[in-house]
Length: 259
Image 1: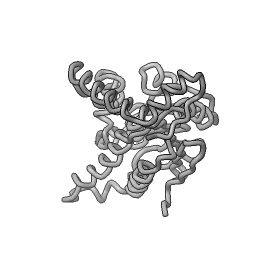
Image 2 (image 1 turned 180 degrees about the vertical axis):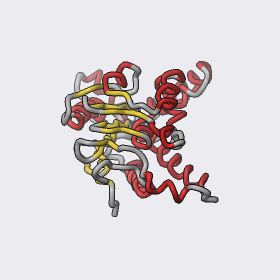
Image 3 (image 1 turned 135 degrees about the vertical axis):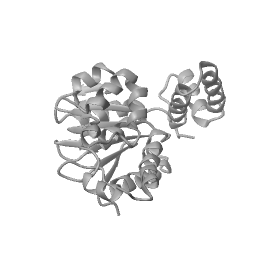
Image 4 (image 1 turned 135 degrees about the horizontal axis):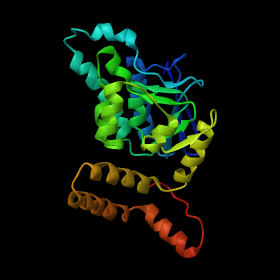
């Protein structure tokens, strides 16, 4: 049974809460539990989208558990330990359903890297976001150097990582790091509204949209168009596309079965 992760399900939406107060640090165990939860949800056809947030109002996740760092110094299995966190965040990045990070406080280090692995980010006004690892003589090691630059561009990513200084929600929205800013305490409710605009659609469609964008963004335009064409051919073989077209012609709401 998870010790640091809570999972709730409502209206085709899974809500994951990191519960490791006071600052919801991302320990090795938290990473393991996140991986297990996402494996479970990947096999749950009733859940169409996923929200991730942190308990309380101080932090989404204020970084990795620094108390674990001394055990990594000189550790012959250091690279394998780093790859463990990479594997979990890659699983979230490639998860075949929309994911939204609800940032309700400090979003630093590993917490920022977790948010970057999600599809969308909703930030409350008090949020501070950053990758402060350089201040410890380190640098982001769970995908931060790669995902941040792909999201906001190399120059801004380098500025944030070189200085280690966090930015506020307004600046994060300006550079495209967060999709929406809401008042303190409203993040989860607003994210649920946003998610409801997705969960009414077919998971068959949503998963292929995500795959086309993710894989296409790492390819040439020609390769991306080929990816899109293959997935477009696939979607026409699903039950949901038949239902969607029939519902449109019948002037009714579709009843998708996600097959």
